[in-house]
Image (cartoon, rainbow, N blue to C red):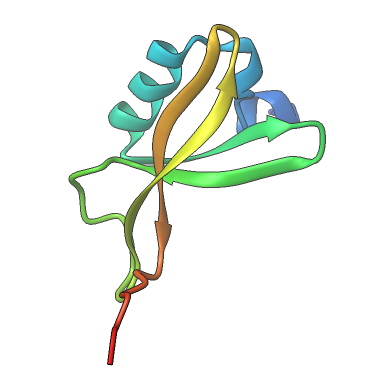
Length: 85
């Protein structure tokens, strides 16, 4: 009988130990991925020009900490429209 064990680190990569380029490449190659961004924080990040977000959400710019500084990525959020009377 074979047993397969996956650690939490394998299941949810940590942006703090990756470079910005590595983080962006992981998102791009997987289309969407859940990433650890802090000791107790994580979120799902997506490609900028993809269809990974469910309606009405759209890819929205966000920033995550990486080994070499802050990194611009995208996550799904409902758009907010500034409406003036």
